[in-house]
Length: 478
Image (cartoon, rainbow, N blue to C red):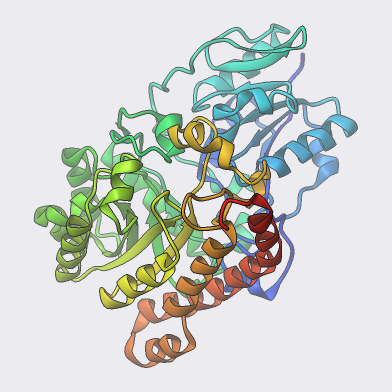
């Protein structure tokens, strides 16, 4: 088979649509394109020069261009899986292109994905994408480890995917359609991913299942070069909040390496602000906190998740409330803000969980929040124990909405708790206070999040009548 043209597609849970809100409301019709998929497109381009990518987060897809491709790679997470399947069917009807699906959801739920694609690439595609291109060119059936496909009516798997030997590829962001035009939007963040894997085993975390528990890192020099290129790419247009997000799941798992990267950033004299995701343990490491501050990190996003020790224990999250609080205070004492990432809908949660969350955020000066209802991704331990409690199989609702029947609170009341927490943390009164008391980037971020949370609440409120109906019909909360 002759391979002259390859296209990559990132489906949108909500496909891109022009709107003024795109400038201010994160994830309305716009968000940052997948770095992982751009990285894979960069790798594929070495084998096939005519390689290009569309992300429905920032643009429409030129379907006539896609239909004439020889291979179309579609990357799906759980929240956009339904749209990914829809796209695959559409391409099949209008093109002879081979469809290869990958990404976290397709990897962990490959038997479902097999119904829509010719092949599923499992795990990380850094080395398997060149392999499958080679097999197509030789008209062979891929038999290397890490592939799933339908044969004689059965979805077969060739074996567990191998871990890539190198993850040093710097993504070529110019391969993503419309990306250069859109970087001025405040809802598109400069991003760099420096390591993969996490040694912990939280029951709800699909990333551990996908990347494994062995932490793999890029060289400090490679990370710094990626940061420089990313900043240069985004400086083509002025953005209100100039801050780069290092998106690692656990950047600090390899402490020696993390320190070497921070020192490399400091020595490079990069004049930029950074944010990063952290576990609570980093809040006890004064040397690391000093380096973070010196390197330009003004804010850390902490996966707090719960406020109850019972929930931490149930979901294998090795934290306690007292440790979380002590960590937050120490990070703040080093002159950095703490953003909180929270989960509601644990088996022990009852009515009032939203108020407890809002009170905690306001009392302890948490700078912003992401609130999600408990999620259940196929392949995770929590999915296996709770799949019978799912409301339905609509993956598109896995964007923070209530998707299951909790033990001690109805889906309807749980969604109301999320709305309550959001409305109190991002109240009009607190907005006015932020306008007068906050300065610079902190003020801009609060205004943007106020607008975003308002949009989120609007979407959550639309579902309340339906959630009330199914909660009553379930007979579980009488």
